[in-house]
Amino acid sequence: MGTCAICFVTDARYLIPTLVAASQARRLSAAGLAGVVVVALDLDAPLAVRAEAAFAQAGVRLVHGRAAELGGDAVMARLFLHRLLPPEFDALLYLDADIQVVAPLDTLLASPPPPGHLRAALDPMALLVRRGGRRGAAVAARMHQGGVPAARHAHYVNAGVLHIARDGWDELACEAFRVHRAGGPFPDQDALNIVAAGRVLGMSLAWNFPIFLRNARLDRMIPPAVLHFMARPKPWDGTFPPWLAAHVRPYAEMRAQWPDLADLMAPMPPARRARYALQQRAKQLRERLLWGRGALLEVVLAAEREVGEPGN
Image 1 (tube, rainbow, N blue to C red):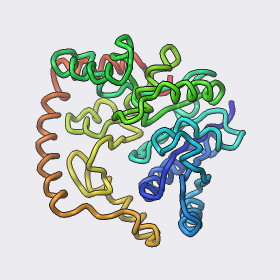
Image 2 (cartoon, helix red, strand yellow):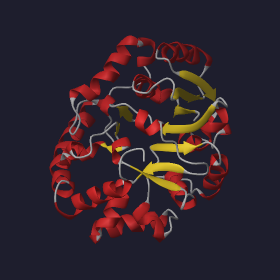
Image 3 (tube, helix red, strand yellow):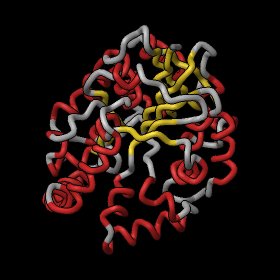
């Protein structure tokens, strides 16, 4: 078995969040199973020097690239990261920058997908489709608008965490880029769901745990290894439900450790912070009622049973 590249893509705006996530991934993965590589897009020379020092101290390899040569932007670039990675890696574990690794990754890393395949977790939208009703119908309509076939709506996966066999990925990535629809809310994710039918293996939500599911206390039933902060606000914006001060602390510590990178993260304006505080409290109650009981909770747990043990 070869080694896996735990990989991220970032630009200047997301350097601190990426540094936090990549550092956690390095600490919580065995060196014999994985290396951690960050592809940094379009950094100017002075910033590149500063970033090199920070990532090197974390044991993370930094590779520089140009968005124009990798799909045009940081969103589509994830499809083509493999072209910049060293050849010794047989598999990739792609992680979004807005994640935190909170438990060891070794079980997942030790079970790479076969050639031509990838492993991904269901997106919350797919769970709503499975539940049905007006919410499910609205989500299915959104997927249809993005070009996703109806047969894939209930199996729609999230692209924030992708465990990829390198063999065969370039062909799949090129196909996804060809069919993607620029300007949509999830261009790369929709494209992968369009072209990867039959090549996606299931993955537990433990490896891509939507943070809002903490509102429904689902983290007690599905202990997460990777937390995904899927929507605004983000944990580097402040302490908002459903996360805790402990989830905010790593960004403050990283800014303090690397003050010459801290200016890349503008603080949230006070008015917006107050608005988010109210919004998140309301969402906490709403999502507890929606996801924490009844039919939708059963849908989530049934989907987990389909996958079986994480990494299998």
